[in-house]
Each structure stands twice: as C-alpha cells, then as structure tokens.
Length: 164
Image (cartoon, rainbow, N blue to C red):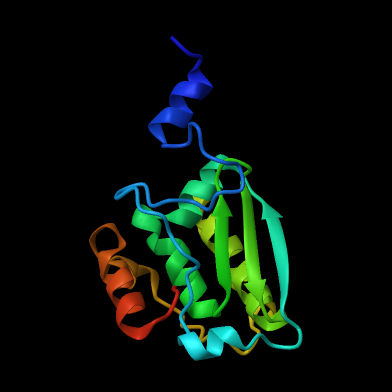
C-alpha cells in the first residue's frame, strides 16, 4: 500500500492529474471553468491593467478557498469580478483581472483563509470603497450567522456579497 500522502491525494482526487490543471469540484468531480460574475461580452475585452497574480497557499487554505463544490471560490470570483484558478497540486492560487479586481480578490481570499484559524478583524484600512462595515452586538451574532452559518450564506447569495 502507498504512503500516507499518496492516500490523502487519492482521497482528494489528485492522483494522476497534471500539476497545472485547475481544481475540480470535490463533490461532483466536474471540471470548473474560470469563475466570473460578469457577462461574456465584457469578458472578451480585457482592461488595460489586466494581469495575473499568484499566491502560494497551504493545503488547508486551498480546501477552505475552494469550499464545498467550489462555491467559495466562485463567490470570491463573483464579488471581486476577477478570474480565479486554484491549482491544488501545486497549491497555487492564480488571480486574473484588472489591478483593482486582483487586489480585491487577493484581499477576499486572505479574509477567507483567516477565518480558518479564528475571527477576522476587518478595519478601515481594509476598505477599498468595496465594503460596508456593520457592528453586530455580541448577543446577536448567533442570530445573524444562523445555524452553521446558513443565514449568513443566504444573505451572501441573495445580495451577491461576501460577509465576514
């Protein structure tokens, strides 16, 4: 039998995949195309400051950014309007778009990764004119998040936003 890392890779569907192949949904095994929230005609015209940024991430962060069925990655892509590819084998996150789109996508990815290890503290210097900050009293946090964060996710879905 193979070593532990081979078994872990097999269980995550990684064995035999090209290292530059984009991530696949872990639930359905379907290939994911670039997640974009804008219309097809807009996608063909790239802004003058279009570029690609990469981030090296950990295996745990990769799983957190991908989310169940790739939903978290799609949500980050939608709200930042950037194209995001996760190369799980290399643990590389590739972000494509204008300078502002890439900056926002990176910021949102860092916020999602920070959630894995504890509470996220969003300060005014985090603001790029892309957020609204609300103070939620401690006694109402459970109500706002809902069971297992379901109410928060419902609000995100309905309003096309990302909430920390």
